[in-house]
Length: 293
Image (cartoon, helix red, strand yellow):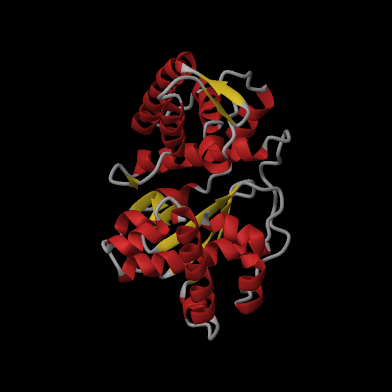
């Protein structure tokens, strides 16, 4: 199980009760209203696009994870001994050959965007198709990249791109993109506890930022539990490895073009923080034990 699973299954509510979030502004203007119901796919595509945009301005930005590529490896493993069922769909060697070529094409297109920064709506469409692969890793389902892409999804992605606050993301900082906390942990026992269980969206200098491509600009129990969980993992990865010390955390609400942050000490210095940290670590430990049985 992952951090998001723990938060969805009640831990988020507990965290919210023990460490309530700070005051959050009201009536933030919606700049890129959703144009269809495929919010998660367009949101995932925007994550890939924003990270490429950041790399265009910051060539030294480090990108830890590409979940679509991980998903392809999972599918390859699935068909190692012949065609298999994944998420109710039959995956065979022919499918893998197509996906191999498709993924390589998208990665080339993305690197071209990183190099030039020039917009290409065909690239936007391919990003949406590529984003469907994330469901393999994150949800254990298969959404075929070959299925048609509705025009409104491409327009939606373009509108999200236009809403990016240029100054915040272009400002010179050290960036880590799609942060894999376990990658920085040196103690193998601690690393095993967190490996493949959580990845945060962005690290901007010493600020941990989670991207939310949602209609409502608000801090839900789920969002708050998630960011507090990331702060706990960041602290553990700093204590047991080379991860930077975090001074700030928050969210980028992509449909509003709005970044909201708070000092990390708001969480770390809360009297209930040790209890919250222990709750989360226990969840990870129980999940690891369950997998070994």
